[in-house]
Length: 171
Image (cartoon, rainbow, N blue to C red; front, side, top):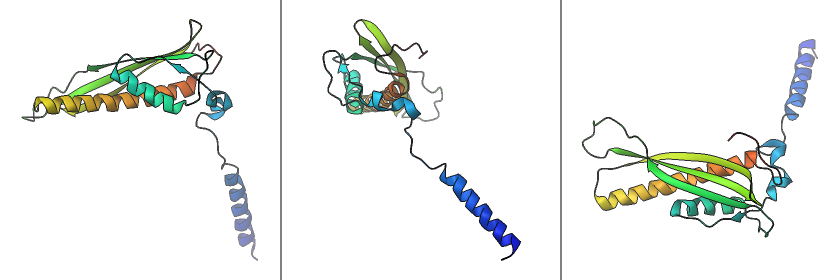
């Protein structure tokens, strides 16, 4: 064998060894989402409106463990509003209507807030149609934005909440 072949073989083996050290499985949030958060249990406060019900349903799927009387209470408050729409009137019909769903969660135990976060999701629908169509479009967009806000809240809980600890992080 020539020296060049030996060197390329050794270089390939070295590269393969280095790359094999980079392949491992790790949780999305590193060590922080270990067994302590997998065991998180919440008593879900009753919702006040449909958007809160959608968010609570999504969070109850994400945190399915059965809660006991000593576990913290997860409260959700959500509202929907229309944000500024486009100023253009280039289209004769079908103006876009922007919708924002803003949701806030608070994890409370014994009157003390352990964790709180606020997230929002924006979406839009094409308005200026018949009233029943507008109402159905608005409701569908609000529900879709509520589901997106629920996923953002779930990610906030995974990233910042630790059972048994009071959060001092800015939200």
